Image 1 (cartoon, rainbow, N blue to C red):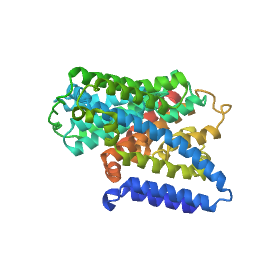
Image 2: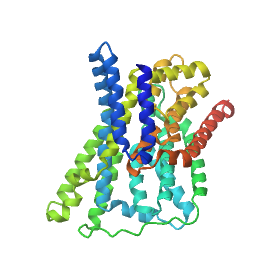
Image 3: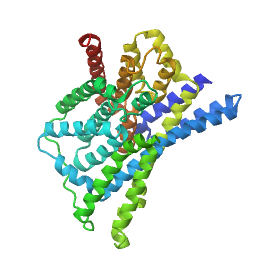
Length: 425
């Protein structure tokens, strides 16, 4: 059974990477892969009810991500429909190529720490679509966004789901993880930014300035922009205050913005306001990307169900025996598999009696699990979002961005190790 499920997953994974050649949408492949994996599990199990129960648990946790993504994409689409991002792109736009690239990278890095890497990536996709004309230049910058978003999320207790898991599990504390991993994460972002700045030759070609929607006043455009950004920033605050999952805060934010848009446009003609409603935004968001998320995460959940990921973590521990190699190995594995079950496996393998709160290992693990996923486009929520929305080819990313992400990841890890094992001793 295990071999068959792994085979189905690998074949599905390969078909997803070959989407451009096969002309088959990766969402369809991901959904079929997920259903086939779970079908094999159900048909070969002695306890079907147990399988169904586990399937429901996985679907519940994955649905949290799907509804979070749905809410974030709708809010971003609504801001865009009100020309909110045009004001931001006008301020970012500069004839100095280096200044533009560093501005985008730094905004992504710090915004990801406050929001999270997925929401930040969705926002940056929208901004770059408004800003950059040339597709190859835009794709290189989106590759940088993935790296910067994951690096920014790694040093913040709310920036990446695995860091949050370690915080909730008692393995790390907020102030210490910021203090210990901030510079390593910054190195992980800075080196790729230098490389991509060198790779983009000549001047960056900007899109012509869009004309503003004539039915909107400047006050209305700015109001939706500020409320929309505030709504996204409110999500981690809501989570901290209520301890409810992030998707609840995102749905609350969407509901509030929905009410606001209904109120400010209620006196307008139907034709004038039809493109400015949440209902219209929901129709415009990329539903295949959301279904791709669902399919790929359910496929990975099948591997988790048959305990492939804990076995990988266990073997890595036995072969390596060194905490640095184990943590960095988990980083590379997280570019293929979901980093959540990998980190969960290590949390169960190593108790706080062996590695107490704020131990060196947990901090390096938080860095590695957060940034290692950038090595492949399918290795992080940020990468999957870009792949789904922008249709970036798996092999293009592998050729153009992966090596840059690996250099950034290993450079940050090396700095972390040197700082802790040599400088601080």
